Structure formats: structure tokens, C-alpha cells
Image (cartoon, rainbow, N blue to C red):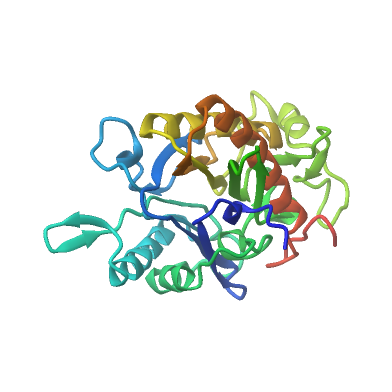
Length: 320
């Protein structure tokens, strides 16, 4: 089976936990030993855990898993379950007779869809970890993508259902760059030609899109935009290239170029846009090459997250 998802990177495993009744979930990425991590956080409304460890000048070099979850800040507790799973399997940073799993995490706001009183928790994080494998990643309204929506300038009633998407590219001699992204943006998602793939609808249940930027122009000063911070694009870029921590952070930075190509507008004060990098260290490569194609696979993964989504929680996907 052709694998054009994050698990095309050897050793990377992905698991989802999904609650379609509450319309929320989480996704866990388990890393092979020696994986170096990086992060770049650009949105104005982030919800994260253990991201400072990934920055240069800090002690920890290696990452054991990454958690992406719904539930807003409540969803960060799902990382406790990931840690429990890893500890049971002896995976973590060695400290005396203990191991401390390093699980950088990011969340998105999906409380407004489904049942906002039910959020990803430690049990859900554990379940996603226990089911993680190297098969092609399921995409759409699953895992962290379960409650994702886009184009929310006028609220959920005119938004579009999105989800989690993934993509990969093979650059020769077995070198792979891949991405997995949960698409919960304030703005619209654009296709490869720059047309609106999904986003703010002209009216509830309309098949036509208003265009978030065009609508913002009409709503601009002196009117203050009445937007709630219920948006975010979060994801992971993985590669089997050998990168230092500095280089992994640079790749995460460059990967945001793909986010900006596919989402309009991106990185607003109402988005918590955060991208991680995982480098498993199998092959020598050039950081510029990895970063350039990281942006490409991030943009493709974002579009896939919209194309594979299904209607849920009263919000229609692009095909309804």
C-alpha cells in the first residue's frame, strides 16, 4: 500500500482516539529512539506543553512522543496518559531509577462544537498511544481533527468542517519529509491554485464561500472584529534526516511557510498556530532541503485535512 502520510518516515507511529458524540479527540505521534525535536509557535493564542525543552540552550535533545489534542487547555491533560503509556514501556529521559517521557503537546479549541464539557483526558491519550502503529494515517474528522472547523469569522453556522490531514514526499535514496496537521483555522484554506477550498460560507449551508479576507475588509476599522479565540492549526513535520536541535527548530520555522500558503489569513491573534519537527536521524541531509519541503508537505497536509473531512456536529464539510 502506498503511504503518503507521516508514517512514511520509518519508525514514526501514529494513533488516534476519537469521540464522535462529543466531537473531540486526540492524536499521538510516537518516535523511535534518538529522535530530535524542534518547535515554532506563531499564532497569538497558543496552548502548549513542554515546548521550551525543544528550544536551543536547553538540556533535553530527544523527544519520545508528541500529543495533538482538542479540548482547548483542558486537552493538555491527555499528555499524562501518553506519559503513562511510555513509562510502562520503559521509554523516557533516564533519571536515576526512573524514566521521564518527553511529550511536547499542543491543543486546539473545539469546545464550541459537540459537547464542550467532554474533553480529551489521560485515558484518551493512553488509548491513542496504545493503538499507534506505522500504517498509513487515517485522515479527516478523526483524532485531533474530530472537532476541527475553518472559516469561523461569522461563527460555526457559516464555517466548514475540516479535520486532520497528512502528506509526505520522498526526496531520493530513501530520504522522506512528511507532515500531519490538524486544521482548525480562523481563516479559509486555499487550494493549489489559490482558490478557496473551504472556509467562511456566504450563508449557513451555502456551497459558496464569502472569503475571509474580503469579509474582513468590509468589517474593518472603525468596527472591531468580533472574533473569539477558538482557532488553531497545529501539527508535526517528521523526517528521517539527521538534524541538530537548532536545525530542527529551523525546519519548524520554515514549515510555517506552508501554513501561510494554504491558510488565509494565518498566524492571527485568534489562532494558536504551532508546528513541531521530529528528526529520526537516519540520513545525512541539508537543512535547507528539509525545510523547503517541510513547507510543501504542510500545505498539502492542510488541504488534505479539508478534503477528507466529513460533516459532524452540525457543521458541513466541503462535500455535503
